[in-house]
Amino acid sequence: MLNHNQNTRGRLIYTIFLFLVYEFIIKDLNLSINTSIYGLFFILILSYYIFGVYSLREKYNFKEFLITFLLNATIFFILLLFHKKSAIILALIFYTVAQSLIRAILEKIYKKNIRVIVLGQETFVENLKELLLNDPDYTYLGFIAKNIKYGLGDIIELDKIINKFKCDMIIYIKEQEEEYLNNIFDLKIKRKKVIDSETFLQHKEGKVSVENLSKSDIIHSLGFDMLTSNFENRIKRVSDISLSLIILILAFPLIMLIYIFVKLDKPQHFFTNPAFFKQKRIGIGGRNFEMIKFRSMKIHDPSKYSKYTSKNDERITFVGKFIRKTRLDELPQIINILKGNMSFVGPRPEWDKLGREYEKKINLYNIRYAVKPGLTGWAQVMYPYGFSLEDAKQKLEYDLYYIKYQNFSLDIIILFKTLKIIFFGKGL
Image (cartoon, rainbow, N blue to C red; front, top):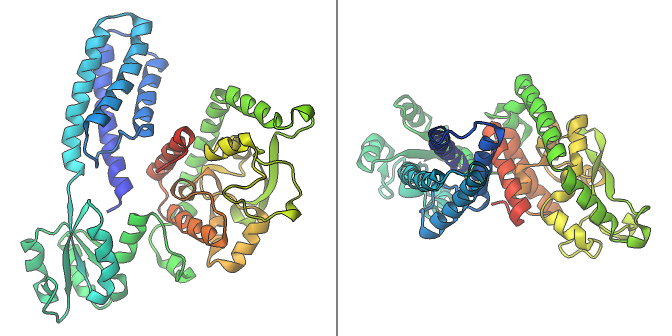
C-alpha cells in the first residue's frame, strides 16, 4: 500500500542482516570494539541511501553492485588503515557476497507485485485505474460493481472473483462506501486487505488533498495522532535536543566556513556585513517567533520586491545559490530547535506576512499550526521551493499528509531524504 513504508520495513530488515554480518566480521577478526567501528557502519548505510543503492524494489544491476562494492571497499580500507590485518580484504569480499545474497532474497519478497481489484462503479474507477496501470508495483485486475455485465463481474460473485484472480488487495471507492458497506464489512471479517480509494491515493501520492477537505473530515478521520500524544511529543523533543547538540558540535567547522563565505559577498564590509537573516515566522499555535538562517540574498528593501523568491532571483548571492540548493542556509535554525520554537521535522514555518494571507486564501491552512514547524519536512523533500499561492497549496497537502501519518519511520525517511538533498541537491 504505502510504498515508502514498505521500503522502510524492507530496508530495516536489510540493515539488521548487514549489521549481523558486519558484527560477525568485527568479532572474527578480533578488532577493537568502539564507537568508531559502529560509526563506520552507520556511514556505510547512509552512503547506500545517498548513492541510490538502498532500495529493494529496483533490480540490483551491475552498476548498483559496482557502486555498493566501492562504498564497501572505502569503509573496509579505513579499517585496514587502522588495524593493518590482511584478512580485512577477505572480509570485504565475504561482506559483499553476503550482502548480495541478502539483497537478492529480500528483493524477491519486497518486489512482490500487488494484484488489485477495485470495488465501485466504472465512472469512479478511471483515475484510480490509470494510476494502478502506470505503477509497476501493482497489477490492476479490473473492477466489480452492482448490476453490471462488464468489468470482472457483479458484486454477488465477489468472493469467487477474488479467489479466481488471486487478488491481494481490494480498493473500494470512498464515495460509494455506504452502497457497498456490507460487502466491505464481509471482506474485513474474512481478513482480506481492504482500503478506501481516498486513503490509498493519500499514501500513493504522499499528500492529502485540501480541495474539498472539511473540519469534519479531520475530526472523524483516522490519524493525526501527533496532535494528542504527549508521550510521543516528549520523545520527539528529547530527540530534537540530542540531535541538535550532536550536529552543532560536528558541523561547527562547516557553520563557521559558511559564516565567513556569506560575509565575503561584500569583502570591504566584512565586519559589518550580516551573515544571518532573521525573520518573523509562524510557529505552533499560530504564534510568531524569530527564525534565524544564513543570509542567502543581497541586502535589499523588501517593499521594492515581490514577497515570493523567483527561480533566478537577482537578489540571491553566489554563495546563496549553493546554500539554498543544499539547504545549508537552514543550519542556524538549530538554535530555534534548542529554544523549542521548532523541531527537526515538521511543516516549514511560513513568513508571517505570507502565512496570514494564505490563511484567508487556502482552505484549512492554519492546521499547520497544530504542530511545531520543522527545519526540514515532508513538503520540503517532496516538493521544490515554492514561488506562488498554488505552490503553497501543494506544500500544504504534503504537510497535511505528514501531520496525519507522522511516525518515527516517516521522520527518519525525511531526514535521510534531506541528507540526499544536501549531498546531491535532490531528495527523491
